[in-house]
Image (cartoon, rainbow, N blue to C red):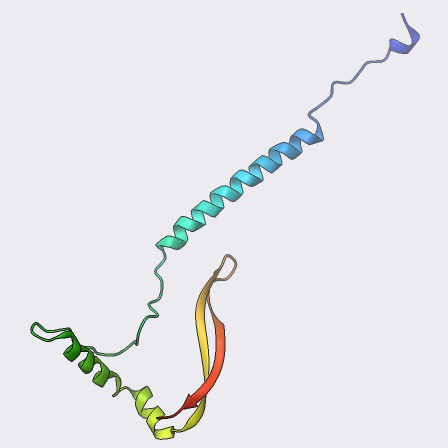
Length: 124
């Protein structure tokens, strides 16, 4: 019997490093799943149509009309909108323009935010 070797050595548990590696791998794997899941989900969401004018009744092109005639009809229909009439009444004037866009945030979802501002003149 040796005086220095009489004590019982306790079995060691898993080290802190192993817990750290498992947590890191889980976080990376979870992040990848969420990232690709959101990419798929965001692509399937409908996007607003911001092209052209909204709320205008534009006639379908009829057979026999040339493209120039269709463009002229479209131009004439746009000249009769309330916005154009209001601009004619206040000409010349200085105007302010605000541009808005939709953004997506994980916490608040889809929000309308100001994308830009500007000013200009209405003249003929």
